[in-house]
Length: 165
Ligand SMILES: [Zn+2]
Image (cartoon, rainbow, N blue to C red; front, top):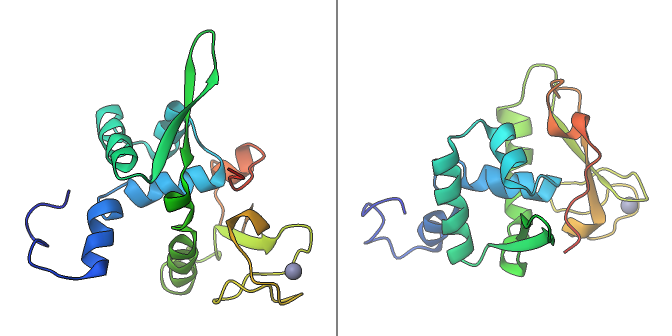
């Protein structure tokens, strides 16, 4: 929660920020889109304190954005997956990324580039493929390291796929 500041704002942006506006929350969602789904890998990537990460994950789960799934039984191991409500944040993530590419990217260029999976076309500001004009969703797009990616970038460390939930 962001505190009481937005209580009198009858505004859907304020309402959305109540869910994903805290520091780290949208980056957690981004990481899960990129395929970092386990507590330890999210924690290592963000460098966030474990208790803060746990609080954010719990909050995102109670808001219905994430769910925890058992991926291994012995010992029990869990990963975080996006719900449909969480997957619906994809256009927001792409729009923020494209805004950041324009106004807040490293000098070397965008750290991540998106392409239409199996087609290779770039994704335009309307999330339409520049090559084949298909309207794209999260499942149609893959993220690749861009010219501004640093060596520790998660996309350079392991093969990643946007979540196909
Ligand atoms: Zn295409």
